[in-house]
Length: 310
Image 1 (cartoon, rainbow, N blue to C red):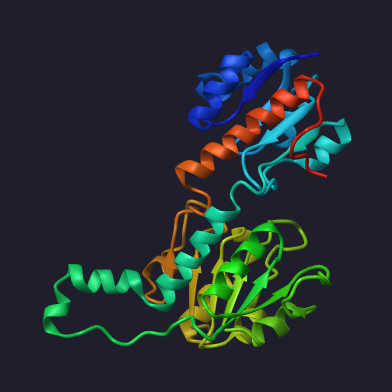
Image 2 (image 1 turned 180 degrees about the vertical axis):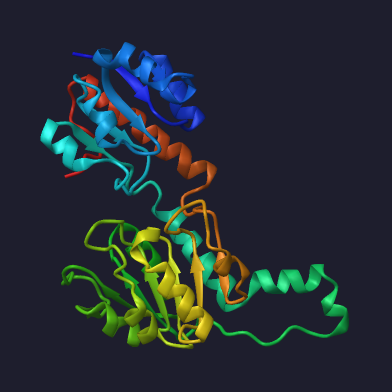
């Protein structure tokens, strides 16, 4: 069995150190000639520790690869089709980031609804001395429509109930034992909601699912929050709806072409932006890295994987 580990992109320091202590590690991102380095170690690589994904070209270059341990709950950067063809197992890092992402969701909602960044700027620029800040909205009593009531979606829902909000949801199927009203139609849910919260992964089925029709159904008093994947929202339609007033606002942690964010979004006053920080806390990222390491160790020990992707 090939037992070396390939790290294609820079990994969290704690995870890198733990892997290096237990295995022979090859850091592809450090190589001046990546192709030459890969060719020299390819037959020894039994697992990939992925923080940026693993495409078909990389996977097919490793004849003895048996595991891709991905750092992240969303595993769309990994070519799972190729892995399935080669009988290569894939793991991700679910659950350990639920709380952090739910916290960021609530923070973004408060930031946009109460215009916290705008108020901060009002004080810093000395504008308060010339007059108070305009009144804002509030979350209490509003309806949040969650697109994707998975592990993270459920954590968000619990927090929103504490904020005295109404929660409804949309997904592929109704979850009979959840206490929230279900909408089979995303557009219908958007029309019934003040907030549309996107928590689904990026897949062919979800690509641009939040389109112009959905955004217009959300309406001029509504707000979109995307904490899932940028590919789920039609970004051009979003910019148009925000510009012409058919959508009230947006709070965005993810984008179509990260880290490149359209100037139009950066210039808008009815938008709050974050650089994909949903799970970016010291505690959560350490736990994610630790889960990558534990999955790899379990694989080479012949034990069941901790968090295998079905």
